[in-house]
Every structure is written in C-alpha cells, then in structure tokens.
Length: 225
Length: 225
DNA sequence: ATGTCTTTGTGAACGTGTGCACAAAGATTG
DNA sequence: CAATCTTTGTGCACACGTTCACAAAGACAT
Ligand SMILES: NC(=O)c1ccc[n+]([C@@H]2O[C@H](COP(=O)([O-])OP(=O)(O)OC[C@H]3O[C@@H](n4cnc5c(N)ncnc54)[C@H](O)[C@@H]3O)[C@@H](O)[C@H]2O)c1
Ligand SMILES: NC(=O)c1ccc[n+]([C@@H]2O[C@H](COP(=O)([O-])OP(=O)(O)OC[C@H]3O[C@@H](n4cnc5c(N)ncnc54)[C@H](O)[C@@H]3O)[C@@H](O)[C@H]2O)c1
Image (cartoon, rainbow over all chains, first blue to last red; front, side):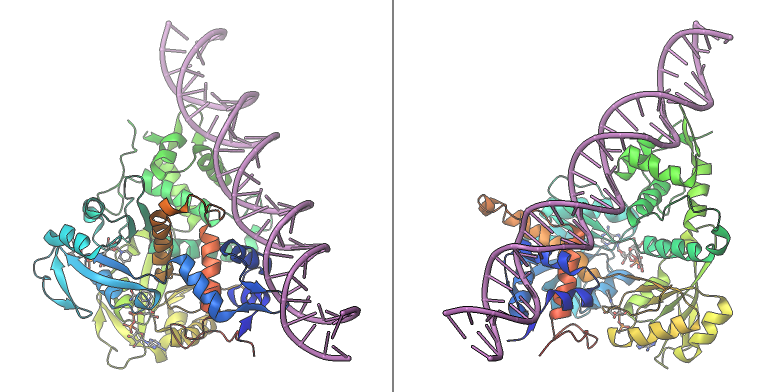
C-alpha cells in the first residue's frame, strides 16, 4: 500500500508538517500512526471534501482573448469542471466553435444556466459589461462567480465571487522587486515592516477606489466634493 | 482640493477603516486630520511605494492561447508594465506579430532579457517546459516570475515566484458551493470550522503532490516505496 | 506477547494581523 | 482667538492562524 508521511507532503508542498496534519485532521483521522497516509484513500477524501468528485458544469461568458484561452484550458476538465457552454454577446461569434464548443448568444444565458443546472459562472467580458452579466447569471441561479474583469462586482448574500486580477499579481512582484533594488540604500530606513499581501491589496484597492480615471467606467463614486 | 476620508475608502474597498489608516501610516503621515487624504497626493504616494511610477519591462514566454491573451491585455500597460518582448519556442510563431509585437524565438531569451533590463518574466508555456524556461530567465537576470503553468518552480534565493492557478480558484468556489448545498443536511455535523484559503491551498497542494497521475509530467517524486 | 520505533493527532504556546477606541491634530466657525 | 467638530494616527486588546512539542497509536521485529 503506497503511503506518504505528513513530513514528505509538507516538504513537497512547502508548508509546515504540523499545519498539514492539523488541516487533514479536520477531514477526519485518515492517517495511520507510524506509517503515514494511504495515498489513494487520502486523495479520494480530499477530492470529496473539496467537491472534486462531483461534476461541476461551468459557463464562460465573454469569449474574447481570455475567454477563448480559458475554454481551451485542459486543467479545468481534469479537476471535475466541465465547460457546459460558452456565451458571447457578439452575434458574429454565435455558432462559431471555440475549443470544440459552439459559442451561444447572450440572449440564451438564462436558459443555458437553467437547463444545465449551472452554479458556477466565469466572467471574461470587458469591465463595463461585467456587473450586468453578473446580475443575469445570479438571476438565473448561479451562486458562484469567477471574475476576470477589473471591476468589483456587487452580489446578493449567498453568492460567492472570486476576482482574479493579474495586474495585482504583477504589482506585488514589482513591489518586491523595488524592495530588492532599494535594499542597499535602505540601511537607515527599516522602519516599515514588509507589508503582507493583504496590506498591499488593501492599499491597491484604495488606490483604485480613489482614482477617478480608473481602467474602466465602473469606478465607484467615492469622490467627495 | 479633492479629498477622501479613510471611512469612504474603507467602504469602497470593503475593508475596515482602521486597518486602512494603519496601512497608510506605514507609508508616512499623508492625511490631514479633520479632512482626510488628498486624493492626488495619496495616489502618487501609493503608486510610488508600490513601484508603479517606474516602468517595468516584462517578457512573456509561451505565446499560446493564454500568452496571446496576456499580450493583448491592456490592464498591464495602465499600471506601468510594458511588454518588452514575446518569446516562443515554436519556429512557426517567430516574427508573427501578436498584439502588435513580433514574437521572438526562445534562442534569443537571454539576449532579450539583458538588452531590455528585464527583471520580471511571465511564464505561459506548458508545464513541462516551465522549469527550464524559469532557469533560463533566472540565469539571464530575471528576479521575479509570474507562473501560469501548473507546476511548482524551484528558484534560487532572492527570486520571487507567484503562481496563478485558475483551477484552484474554481476549486475554492466549488468547495463553498458544496458547503451551501449540504447546509441543510449538516445540522448535526458542524464540527469542522470553515477552512481558510490557506488551508484549502495546503490541502490542494498536498493532493497534487500525492497524486502520481498529475496534470503534467512535472509532478514531484514524493511517492515512497 | 512485549518492546521498540515511527508517525499521527492535538493541546498549548506563540506570533501576527485585525479592530476598537481615543487622544492629538488641524480645519472651521463664531 | 477660543470653541467646536471632524478625522487622523496609534496604543492596546483580542482573535486567529501557525508552530512546537509530546502523548497516544499502531506497525513491526524479536
Ligand atoms: N486578456 C487578459 O490576459 C486579461 C487579463 C486579465 C483580465 N482581463 C480582463 O478580462 C476581460 C476579457 O479580456 P479579453 O482580453 O478577453 O477581452 P476581449 O475584448 O478580447 O473579449 C471580451 C469579449 O466579451 C464579449 N462581450 C462583451 N460584452 C458582453 C456581454 N454583455 N455579454 C457577453 N459577452 C460580452 C465580447 O464580444 C468579447 O468577445 C476584460 O475585462 C479584461 O480586462 C483580461
Ligand atoms: N489557457 C488557460 O486559460 C490557462 C489557464 C491556466 C493555466 N494555463 C497554463 O498556461 C500554460 C499555457 O497555456 P496555453 O493554453 O496558452 O497553452 P498553449 O499550448 O496554447 O501555449 C503554449 C505555448 O508555449 C510555447 N512553448 C512551449 N515550450 C516552450 C519553451 N520551452 N519556450 C518557449 N515557449 C514554449 C508553445 O510553442 C506554445 O505556443 C499551460 O501550462 C497551461 O496549463 C492555461
């Protein structure tokens, strides 16, 4: 029976072994003391807990550069996600196959979501259309949204939104890069602790909120008189 | 003079106002008591601290579906990132313009990095090529890497890596989705606290590490006898 | 069966990040 | 110029996540 110890897994994942064991303990006691974890059984238990044993139908809305790349991405299928439909507002796109799936028009969004029992939607439209698309998805029954558009989406309680902001990823790298570069000259200026990602994100969000000439027209109105 | 209060910014960003003020205080005392923060000055100070006032040349390696989408993405330029070059190993791609920039062959990687003073590299190649591309980037002087390939990259000290794993984003959504669905039947089973993203990530990473039939051939060898 | 050895599962200590609450600062008004 | 009002900047307490450390559990050898 192939097994792994928490120590081996922790080393491979780059985390503390005690943390890993404690995390696993929330799922139950699936390890054997003195031996480790049965790999196959562990994978199954984690998969089950994460919901990967289920088949999750997903719709992607906005089949432009990014949407098409996502549609072509094989990493989704291998984790239990099935692209149930591709949706775009551009009539020229309708019917055109992307990654073997014909693009459907945005008019049919509600029907598609309902007919396929879709609960997860991916938004890859321009920022200006994102909130509207989001509202329609939620109205049709979607309760989880992965948002690639650079906008804060407003959703009712019970709906989860995750935003993927690639610019922020680069900003975080640039921030550390700047740190490295200025390290020599900073012998007398170490008052500021290294900010966490959370701090950086808060600052970046604040900057976005305060910036009237934001990337798109969806900037929240926070400018006082 | 247009100003914002920490309260307004916190509401817009969805964070606590005290946290936001404390974060800002690390940058210095840029606010005026009784008034708030001068928007323009604040934006400049944050931009400077995050390194956005600098021009960061970036190379994208692997101009497939995702790489092309990234090259076309306007959000980078607006934050001070300039796509200095697109690099691909496919000879058929060489010279072909993507987003107005001609793709260059991977052979020239080192020269491109050095000539442009590139310190940030984006990897959008298949997982199997990622480590090799990473090594070459680092060897040429790159010290920050944004990795889209589903692989753990090994880098020397002093090099930062950020991994963007879109599957994990969907997994986190699916996890919460499952939670919502099972909420009714879980009246007697609330022993497990809601895991944080960190816990989920650790578990997912562990699963990947333990799974011999991983997405790509780059799975670390953690399988004991 | 008994002892030894390995590794889990977890209580407790620790550190870090978050939020409260308020004094100090400065603007504004009379 | 004093009184008042608003909002910052931050000390402090709390909560949360992480790590340490070890007893308990089980496998395996003798
Ligand atoms: N390309 C990237 O690498 C990248 C990276 C990060 C974020 N983004 C963001 O992702 C989004 C998409 O990027 P892109 O490069 O694919 O843009 P794109 O312009 O290539 O594609 C957008 C697509 O959305 C469609 N669309 C517009 N309105 C719609 C609506 N109401 N309903 C359905 N479809 C609609 C358009 O027809 C188009 O096909 C943008 O908001 C962009 O800022 C892109
Ligand atoms: N498409 C997505 O939405 C998506 C999402 C998440 C992650 N990813 C990951 O991003 C990577 C790229 O995805 P994709 O869909 O664009 O794949 P793709 O196959 O379309 O593109 C890969 C490109 O990399 C080039 N390449 C291969 N080896 C190279 C090397 N050694 N040096 C330089 N270039 C090389 C290929 O010629 C090709 O153009 C993959 O690892 C994928 O798993 C993709």
